[in-house]
Length: 410
Image 1: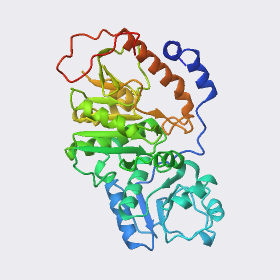
Image 2: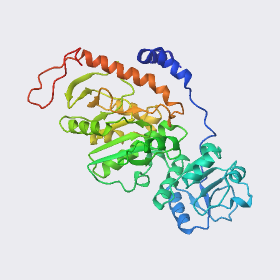
Image 3: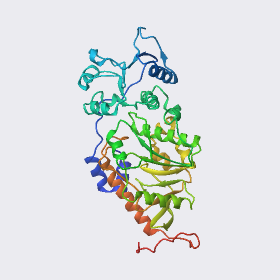
Image 4: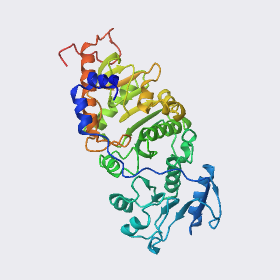
């Protein structure tokens, strides 16, 4: 860790920042994620329709499907393989397991120990073989329905690098995006079952789940997911997107507070509403403070953090501009890309609208979410200090808004 990074952690989080990093280090992955597939591939399948879908997606990935009996080292896609035959699968074999596939988890673990990847379409079976650590990071989950199957295979091809990350087509990931003025999304990896179940348990049924992109470098996969979502919204004329991640934590009263937030946003100019600012740096500036219907709204010149945000079209266009060739090569994560948006107008609340689930693990960084707690606490503390120091400015008479209370009376 560089001296500048050590100084930055200490300045923003204090000694607790170092403690959280020591206590909650990055976890070792259970096996590497999937590797590349060959230029020529083979499809071994009794299922004509699914085989056709697979062939179409391989064509999108500029892969040539050759006859199954052609010799040579090819990546071989097995649709509904006969696991009970005892045949052992090699590092060039991709097993796609549908409702037609019959197997025992223990037998699968034996015969597929060295296979290239396994794509399972049953969540129940996925949970079982995941807990048994079958295939490790080479295990993927796709939905069983036709659209879900297609999207799952496309996600796998992105993970393997068969499809260039900067040319990924959002229509293959979110094909039926509606053109409503406001859309609600939750970004989630289907393979991280505990995170998804945590989100579903909170009753946010009006949020549509978008399956994220799973890569060895999780922060790049996260950025690609946000870019695809932003591109979809822009293409369909969506004016605002309410986007959360599946480790968001909402408290009682969340719906009422969100309604107040959206009502307030209709009265001011803004680009991003930040439901949780995970980093409020010393360079951040408060530009305005207002009280409205029991909420304290703080206007900032930038934001960092993606747990829960509302984006207008200008912000969506900025998110859609993230590219691996540029930002990925420079190590610029999607939240830092957002932070760098020119002339950004940010609104947040104090206290924050949402929280972060400490009991889960980070999908992007593979460490315990509790590592974020000192960072979030420091951000809220700094924002509170900035609010206390802020001069209210000119009168807001006639605006329908209430000026901030004098210092010391909040």
